Amino acid sequence: MNLLDELRTHRLLAIVRGPDPAAALTAVLTLAESGVALIEVSLTSADALGVLRRARAAIGPDFALGAGTVLSAEDARAAADAGAGFLVTPAIAPSLAEGGRLGLPVLAGALTPTEVVQANDGGAAAIKLFPASLGGPDYLGALRDPFPGTAFVPVGGVDADGSRRYLDRGATAVGVGSPLLGDAVRGGDTAALRDRVAAFLAAVRA
Image (cartoon, rainbow, N blue to C red; front, side, top):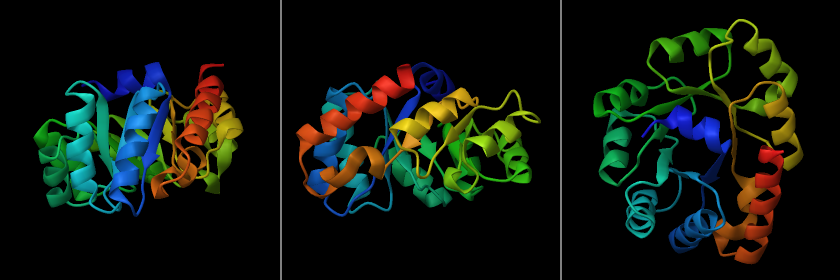
């Protein structure tokens, strides 16, 4: 898959992280059914690899389903074996090089200009600006000046209103966890999750 094209097209990456594997799987399927086209399952979730396997079996081989919080080369290989089509890291980590070896695109975490250079040199498909809340949209705008050709995906504290501000400052897409998922990853109301999906999709498509 071409992760950069998917990010440019859909502009929203949903991040699923939670303590209940069954609820996490239900959340993934609800997101997909509600129109979210890019979904990441964090490896810090309970039975994350099992959730990935079951989600992949349910939504098919072509859906943009990835693994997040991928740090080690071993994590990258396990995620690939479980059906991840892309990898997401919180920082420059061995998983970036391993993703390249496996042929999986990597959304690599970076915050400073030095880290952006390192991630780009390491072959990242795009930069996960994390934690985005430290600098906000203005910091993203400042980074865009020296890196006009880099695709940035702010993650961390991005709500529906904030997603629009980041996109207006040049973000390629936004990554959203708890402001979108809410209590769904703990067995909460999926109808409320669908409502939040609608609000985020409206914001990123505006």
